[in-house]
Amino acid sequence: MDFHQMQDRARAVRSRYAEAEAATYGRSWTTEEIMLGFLGDVGDLAKLVQGKAGVRPREDLDEALAHELADCLWSVLTLADAYDVDLAGAFTSTMDELEESLSAPAD
Image (cartoon, rainbow, N blue to C red; front, side, top):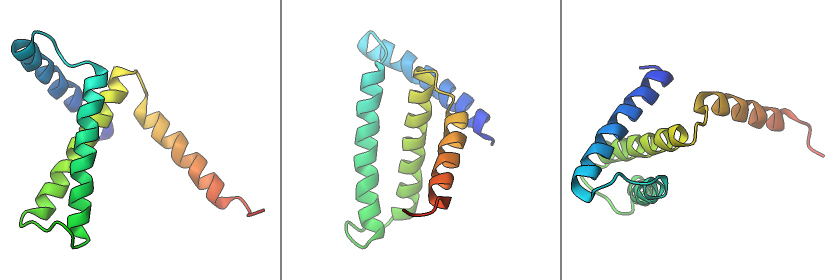
């Protein structure tokens, strides 16, 4: 799956969540609520990273880590879509900037 297919899939899943939220709560989540959900996912990811370091062990650590990384990616894709951010373009230009700064001679 390429990046644009991932964005389309994330958008489709978000749309289904919005329908479920509207049915349950009478409205879909705001971007702020999506961001708060992302923060919760990042907290869960932090615990799994601790697990990989030997703290907070669990039997399904690798599967849980992969799942949480995918959850976080979905949140980033969803937020980028909500704010009309060309994430592929922004990623490319940011990586170019970082590589350029790493190639620059130290003062």
